[in-house]
Image 1 (cartoon, rainbow, N blue to C red):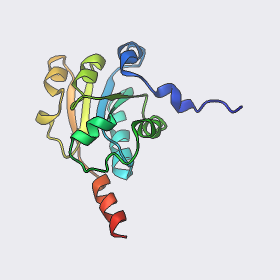
Image 2 (tube, rainbow, N blue to C red):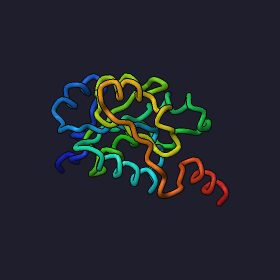
Image 3 (spheres, one colour):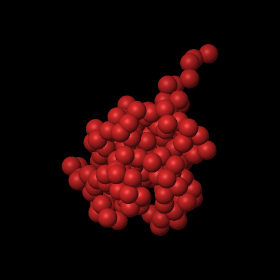
Image 4 (spheres, rainbow, N blue to C red):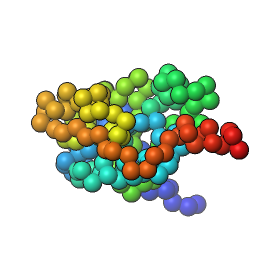
Amino acid sequence: MYPRPSFETKLCPPEELAERVARLPRPLVFTNGCFDILHRGHVTCLAQARALGASLVVALNSDDSVRRQGKGADRPINTLDDRLAVIASLGCVDLATWFDEDTPILRILECEPDVLVKGGDWAPEHIIGAPETLARGGSVHSIPFEHQRSTTALLEKIRRL
């Protein structure tokens, strides 16, 4: 029998999040997204987010949550379990969790991050959890895109081919 992959220790059910976050070094960075088909834009943003603190928590939309976002009838392409495994395998990620709601506000309130991050398509004042994070003395960042990539564009390209 082979040992379990080490990334599995980073998978964190929502009901364990507060307890596990309490053991992470601060400052704690939080971000969220679908991360359906991981691409260079995602990993660059995640690495930059992690550089803003001592640990990084990433919350993924559940499959139902992705479907409600109107990204397309066939989305997500990858199941939540698969998306979590890929995100958790990244060295810059300390914990990977999920949410079934339309926004990650419950996970943000549970984590009480010092730093809240989203990609450059989000203005800081529109990032979910920004008021709560700022009220606790934290900071909110919108990381500019260095690599113009999107899962939607990638899927369109694949379908054209």
